[in-house]
Length: 247
Ligand SMILES: NC(=O)c1ccc[n+]([C@@H]2O[C@H](COP(=O)([O-])OP(=O)(O)OC[C@H]3O[C@@H](n4cnc5c(N)ncnc54)[C@H](OP(=O)(O)O)[C@@H]3O)[C@@H](O)[C@H]2O)c1
Image 1 (tube, rainbow, N blue to C red):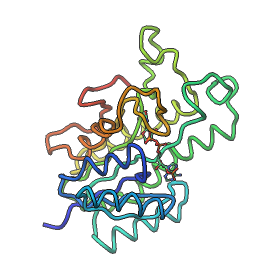
Image 2 (cartoon, rainbow, N blue to C red):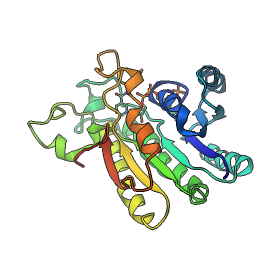
Image 3 (tube, rainbow, N blue to C red):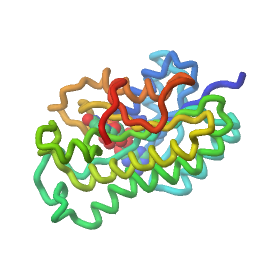
Image 4 (cartoon, protein in one colour):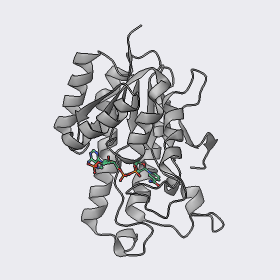
């Protein structure tokens, strides 16, 4: 059987890097995407020192040419792709906060477009580009890094823990990403590919901040589990640590 191959975007640091570490025993070669090649090479050195079979691909998800380059890389080196973790993402300002960057009434249009470009449009475009390679896998897995902040059910429930934690551009971009999960999973329902959304938890990273309750070492558990789901595992779902979240 050919070698299992995984691609994790935005994996030079944070949850993406931890996901690469957590996939050490998955039997997969882990290719980490990094905008900055030097940072990516440093991350790969750490991963290899930890026993992970890792390589780096310079990759900016907002650049269409990088999507094509990623397709060519996986196609020419391996001819297929087994796991795609759509992890790269940006926040809309410092979170939690109350400035206009978080406000549905005042969000600057350029910020709204920038956040959607990275967290939604580029994720869809990359996945579409790599789908022919995922279809060649006997067990393709796509993990979209969502957030509990994507949940409209929880945002509209005054008793939910996120009711007062609103960051419009970020939250809406992740809600849109969840829609992609649902629609793509439906389209691929008769294939070997499973597509799910992950809420990693509120994790101590550059994005999550120091006040986050979850340590980075636990922050990739949901991504890693969804990336290695067994054949009878779910598709088209939205999960945190094995538990479904309301859409
Ligand atoms: N931390 C949390 O509490 C939390 C909670 C819910 C969901 N999430 C989601 O989990 C994912 C990872 O978050 P994190 O906390 O690890 O964030 P992070 O520490 O800020 O790391 C983000 C990663 O994404 C990369 N990235 C950003 N823009 C990119 C682009 N245009 N092209 C390629 N890579 C890009 C960054 O690369 P550079 O180093 O080049 O900037 C970095 O590697 C995100 O999708 C986030 O929304 C996080």
